[in-house]
Length: 230
Figure 1 (cartoon, one colour):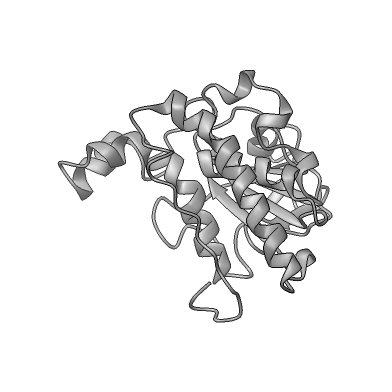
Figure 2 (tube, helix red, strand yellow):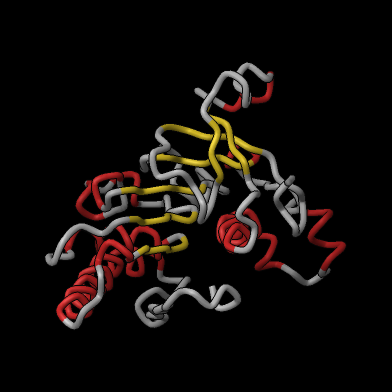
């Protein structure tokens, strides 16, 4: 976004409330952080922020926090929330009021990249994107490939697939013609070519998604940047 120079970006950082080793506490704190973020947005609206221009984006716990934030904004309805591999552990057992879902904004799009491990395993947005099936290991994230890049990269080995979601989104910001995805019932049908650009709805994953898109969308990516095949 800083390279585009046509956006105002606010970063919310709460490291003490979302410390990794204490995941239970960190996950519970998403509701607190989300509520405070909503109050801040209401303040900005009172000072002139045009709410329909607001786009919330969050990775993992940040995605769940964005959902709580969207629910608690009192000055209107948030236009868009993008969830980047929203956190899965614990959240799949919690009620909608404590996590991200399609009711939290006018349009909610999700990029799944580590579903069932660190990421949420099911469709929760208006449009859910499943690059490379949305599962680990993502291309470029298997043990051999990571060891070749960095023999000591234990953290990358654990989170490589989870992090792909934000890497895909970040790249989409500067690539308005990339990351085309096909609406399909499941990955197997997509893989067999049953769903394609000739008989199914297609849209771009990432910043330039068509906000009328609904359902599950599938695509393949490259194992390294540039990730988009186009």
